[in-house]
Image (cartoon, rainbow, N blue to C red; front, side, top):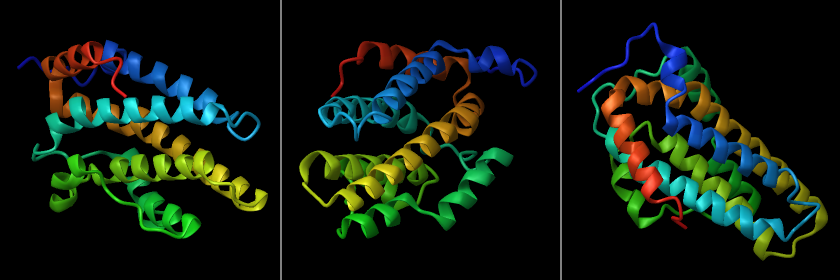
Length: 193
């Protein structure tokens, strides 16, 4: 397996897979910021998020889930982990929505192992649940505004974690060959919904 050299971080972070993910993040963030002013954007955002999350979970998370070095994230990951402990997105979504946030069937194996991947998975579930609430329910304006604020905060935090921490973890664990495989899988499945 070909590995990246530590001194070549700019080249590593410019891998085509990360370029695609950053592009999707930008598009998702732009739609999300206009959600309250244009409620019709909700379904478009939901489809984009579901597809994006499924690709991350299938083509990246599945490759690294059993790696023994998965929990070696570095200082930025420690910062984000601390944030997770104090403001867990699933708990915030549960409190706001008044209902349990359930894991999808295809996520159960990671839930059972208490993997560090539960941090981004939990964010994915919270984001989808909060967005679904905004799309499907006519709530009072104050609650909708609060749900929207939390949705944006969790989404922004998820994007920051991925771009400042998770990409670097992927580089360490997957190496060049693994990133290339994930990129090929991602490219073949651009239309996942």
